[in-house]
Length: 340
Image (cartoon, rainbow, N blue to C red):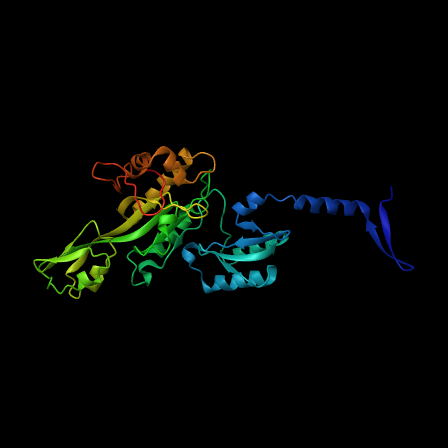
């Protein structure tokens, strides 16, 4: 068998081709095309409908991105994509239409500014967050600060079963849908009245959209059943008679959106920042240990019962668990919930 063939153009023998080398190159290319799409997706490279093209999801915890990183995303899109980017519903910047052969160059380009691709698959996703109290007047808690810290500590941690999403909202407006996350944290504030300072101006009563305050004996009285711990009454008090007794996080677990959305269970109140980390860690451990197959944590809680989660995670951590007067786990009626 001939080792070389010659490419004939017209009357001239222009190019000698190495047959064995050509076979080796074709074999190599064939091997490259045997891509593990699940593995690539877990690494943040998402297969598109177009042949050999992927969307590259970039890591943007809390949706906070420096101008340098924005320029880098534009550069990558111009060089390896089509000059466009997509902002996902979970605050990630995505560069579509990237050929798989350019993955190494994209990764190296990101490393130059200490940036990386986000994760998908059965692991902790990049956490999302609103601005919180950093500059939003409604914010009660520092969502951006704790979101960045959670990302550094837990991003990409394997769960062994399914995706695990975490979000932070700075107040009960809940812009970042903590009710629809595997684990969500919402800022909350418990008001208290300094009766000696109060002038009975009623501004706090008028400001309360929940009708949780009423005047009795010239002083505002709080209805605990209506109060949602938003802190609006504290903000409007002109003489600081209505004060913050305590500030913390309301924890929710077991929510999800998608084809079959569910609201999460409210499981603990007024968590300090360090308790947020403890709850995340123990919840992931509990989920990894108790889930079966590809079920989300909400399905695991449905199958085993909310009390099991509360007893083995929330109570064990010494957190202020949310139960009814009989000590049973509460099941809320708004929206669709796992449980009965």
